Length: 106
Image (cartoon, rainbow, N blue to C red; front, top):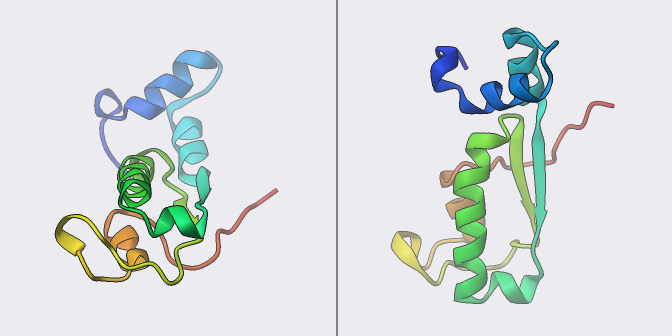
């Protein structure tokens, strides 16, 4: 992501918390940040669970630039919003999640 530092709020927060961190280092850390969300299959079938999951996906995909991955939605169909009737996994990808397995570097 190549934006001016004044618009990269997450890089600013990292730099503020670690004064020795340079801008490029902060951005590299953010590019590797991943989130794995797991939802109970029963909750994935409920409108409230889908609303929460889609909200998490939409916001977390901006924060965790290395990717947001969701487990537990294999057979769920969307019950809310503009993707009604489609597979929940497809709606999550459109909300910013990544398909496939996360790649963790230790």
